[in-house]
Amino acid sequence: MSINIKYKMTFEHADRLIERYYEGLTSVEEERKLRIFLSRKDLPEKYKTEQAIFSYFTPAPNKNKFDFTRYLRRTGIAAALLIGVFFAHFFLTNRAASYAYIDGKKITDIQEIKLQAMVSLANLPSEQTLILENLQLILEENRFEEKGNILSTPQ
Amino acid sequence: MLLTGFTGIQLLPAQNNLEIKKAFDRYGNKKGVVMVELTGEMLEDYDFSFFKSLMIREHPEAADYIRKRLAIDEVGAKKVKQVVSNGTPTSIYLQLPPQRKLHRLILFNETSNPEYLVTLIYIETEHDAEDVLKLILKKNK
Image (cartoon, rainbow over all chains, first blue to last red; front, side):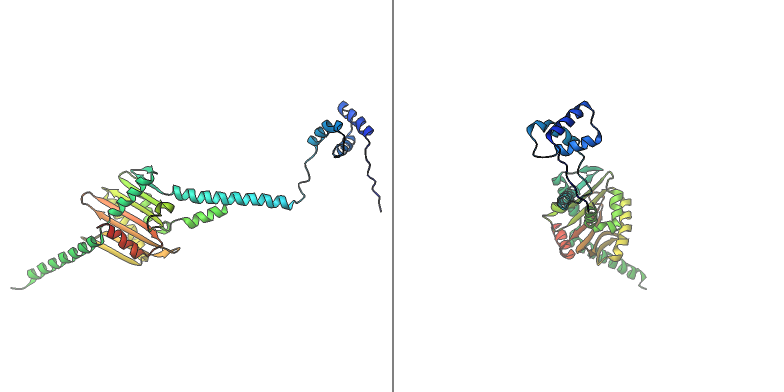
């Protein structure tokens, strides 16, 4: 069984160490002790400058420690970004996908694109024309057959 | 990225599996050609989900090339309507089986009056393909 007794640095001791620190005479161990002392929240105003200096050089907290709230926040932001990118991609590609090429030149003017689409549809023959054309072809074929029959009929 | 990639694939028009895609790729950017592609909200006023057309002027070889592509796509067609002149189809209307709940239509026309013009149209629609076809042809009275 071991008993840990926490050593609490006195102000006098701290003052001495700070003085040595500024003179560049402190050891690594002394600076560690000073850092612990200066991380206390109940220190008088006079230590503010040293607190600022030491907090700047204080190593970042252990990153290996798993912080669930931070993890949730980060994944939430990432998910929101991903969804945003998805919707932007969906709507932008939908808009950008409508286009026309005239003589190899890309046209993006909506009215012009729609007009060209209408023109292409108008180029198709109507149902009536289709029927009439087919009837005409049948009649022409029959006429040929009749002519052939006349020519081949023995007199 | 995976999600967008996956959705992107899902959004690709079914035309990509058809032979006529080669015609659009081959002639789309050429001189004397007009190619149109309409998707999404641009088609809100129409009965289509996807529209792509090609108008080729003074290029009879293009008509032959498209006819060959259509002959392959015709194999899986549900319905075929065509006008044959001197043994060559000048108008071909194909109704393809639906894909991803979308009915597909391919419309081809070759005319030389008043100018030589080949028109190829590919349409995807949620509506009945026959009804859409009737609507298009009625408008062209």
